[in-house]
Length: 98
Image 1 (cartoon, one colour):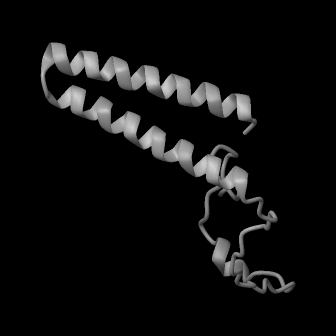
Image 2 (spheres, rainbow, N blue to C red):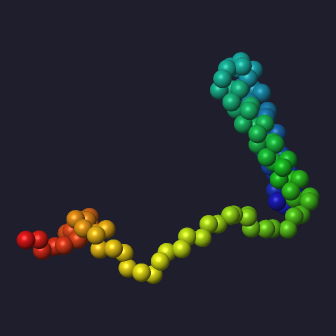
Image 3 (cartoon, helix red, strand yellow):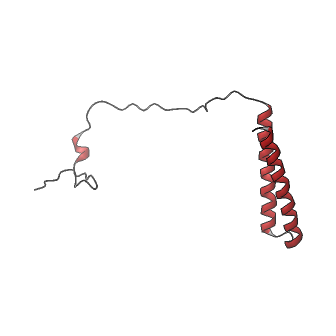
């Protein structure tokens, strides 16, 4: 994030906080107002995390994922596997049955 984006985000969060305060004054501490206040707080936490990431540059790395190698044999499958099989939408495995 650029510094102007951070300033704009902080300004917008301040306006949201002010609006939620006005809603709390009008409607009281109802569930909807509590959820909105919680959302503004979560946005503030996320914005702070982004600012912290911006201050401490880190090298980008791909996530490490353990991969399991599955060996598929080159030999043909046993034809018994396909006995009475039906290819949906293609008219069946054997189109000419007698």
